[in-house]
Image (cartoon, rainbow, N blue to C red; front, side, top):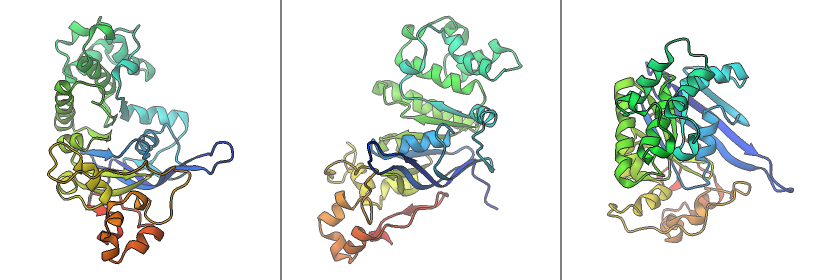
Length: 323
C-alpha cells in the first residue's frame, strides 16, 4: 500500500479579484501536488508563475478559492485554533534573513519567539540551544546575546532556520532560501537542509526559480507556469531529460547546460487573461520552430488545454507534443 503523502494539494485554485473592473486573476489554477514524509520537493518557475501563492496556500496563509489541502490525511481547517496548531507542524523559511529578523531582538529572543507564541511547556533555554545547534550554530550559547547585524548572512539564515526548527516541525516551506546569500554560503545552507532531512526526517517544499538549486537538493521537482504544474517527476528524470518546452528553456540557460540556450520571448501572460489552449503556447519554441506543426499538434496547442497533472510520485508532462 502506498503511504499517504504528508501534505497534499488537490485541485487547488486561488483567484484574486480584478482591479478596476479587470477580470479575476487565476494565480493558482488547478494544482495537484503531494509531498511525502522525508521528501524534498522543489517548486520551480519564473517570477509571477504562482509558486509563492501556492506555497502560502499550503501554509494556510491564503485560503484556496476551491480545492483542498490535507496534512497527514486531514483536511486543513482555517479556524484560528486549528491553524495555530498546523503552523507548529509546518514552518516557513523566508529568503531574506535580514527582513525576517527583528534587528532589536537578540538571537535567543528570535528563536524563542515561536515557543512563546505556542506556550511551550518545557525548558525554553534548552529548546533554543538545541535548535541553534541543529541549525549549525555551535556552541549555541555563544550566539544567544548577539543581534542580527553582528552576524554574517549565512549565520542569519541559520538563525531563521533555527526559529523554524525550535517547534519540531514535520515540514519546512523554504521560499528562495539561498537567493540572498553569497555563492560560497549557499552550498552550506543547502547541505544543512539535506542533513535535516536525513537526521530528523524533515520534509521540505523549496520554492525557487533556480533549477540548479533543485538539482542539488530535491528528490522531486514540479515546474510551474502561469498557475499550473506543467512537468513533474524525480529530479534526475526532469533535469536530465526535460519533456516540456518550458522546462527545456529554463534548463538551457544554466551555465553547465550542453543545450543551445533558448531565449523565452516576452513575459508570462497576465493571470487574469490566460490564453486558450496550452498556456505556454505564445512563447513556445516548439511552435515557433515548426516542430508542433510537423507533429500535427499545433492546432491543439493553440486551442486545447492539456490535462492537469496529478500530484503523486510519478513523472508527468502537460504538453500535446508528449501525449
